[in-house]
Picture 1 (cartoon, rainbow, N blue to C red):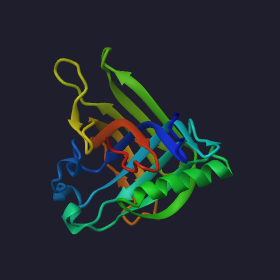
Picture 2 (picture 1 turned 90 degrees about the vertical axis):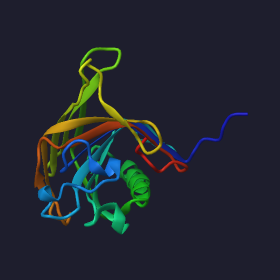
Picture 3 (picture 1 turned 30 degrees about the horizontal axis):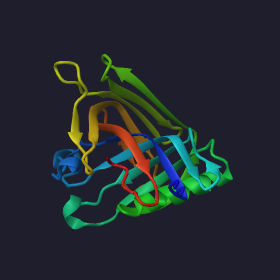
Picture 4 (picture 1 turned 120 degrees about the vertical axis):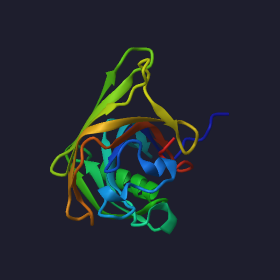
Length: 216
């Protein structure tokens, strides 16, 4: 008997850059470098999702991009306060696609915190291999027009393999560093930074109604 089709599913590539040095301390459960964050344990950054395959009921979502610009709470993990974010949706999405993406990604973010606003913007996601097959690392070039520009390169081992850490669910999180990392949106409380040479992570993601955690 065939498995029942889920109401929605999206999967593809995710890359993230923040304002802490590699590797993002939140993946280690440690405090952020306070000298980089006004003497406080806090961080700012952005997740970008490129949907390779996706649908919501009968709405095709393949090929679209989505992003969160975010602030972690002051005090880090210990305070257990909501993370604040702005949700960006690819301007190529039509009304039904945009509504579907808003529902999916605000639901996923509800595990972390609060979406302050939802905006549409032209968004681009480029992923390029770095190093030799069969296991290259990947560099990324991201733009949310008018708000965010990020370029990043992978961190590689001495024998030419991409560096990674174990993710929250046991899957690999590949690590890199940004060479460009600019964000400007006054609707996010700490919504302006220009911090190259900071942490970058990238991995494959998959979300569905039964799996709302995108970090592997």
